[in-house]
Length: 191
Image (cartoon, rainbow, N blue to C red; front, top):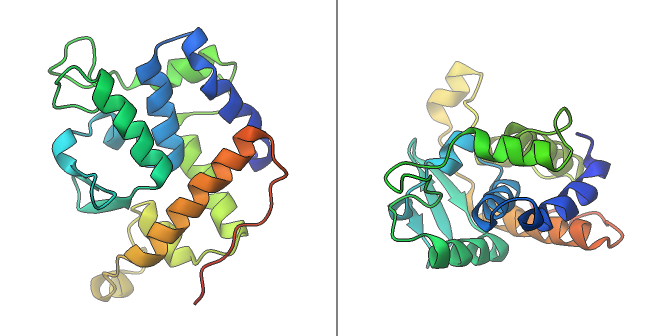
């Protein structure tokens, strides 16, 4: 999916409850806001979240800073969660939702060939790189492994202050895109 197609997709997701359930819409919202891997998101447990600090800790020591918008999605999810340990419980509350739930939701929205859960990662990376965010910060947010073995052995930086700012600016960008505002360049964090 091309970045200029994101506003229409976000508007389609916002209206998803006419086709499916609220939990699936919220899952798509949170996936777009965090651009984590789909399996990480659907397998997330409430114990992995520090909502006071605005962070989500994934199984592989991948800390994800949460924007104000992501925290609002999580608050909605807490109200409909039904006491499951999973943020996105399946029909059986002891298991997470199916890996295909979000994919089929995208199909129902008309994005069968155009978008997947992983596509949110690609679009976010593209836009954030084009907006001038540092590649190391973006790659760390994506939880990509360093390809250079020597650099990877020595550089264990998390870049959390920069990532927190980037994730909030990303969420604000998505809000503006969904609302149809003229998309302007995000402010690059000071070096």
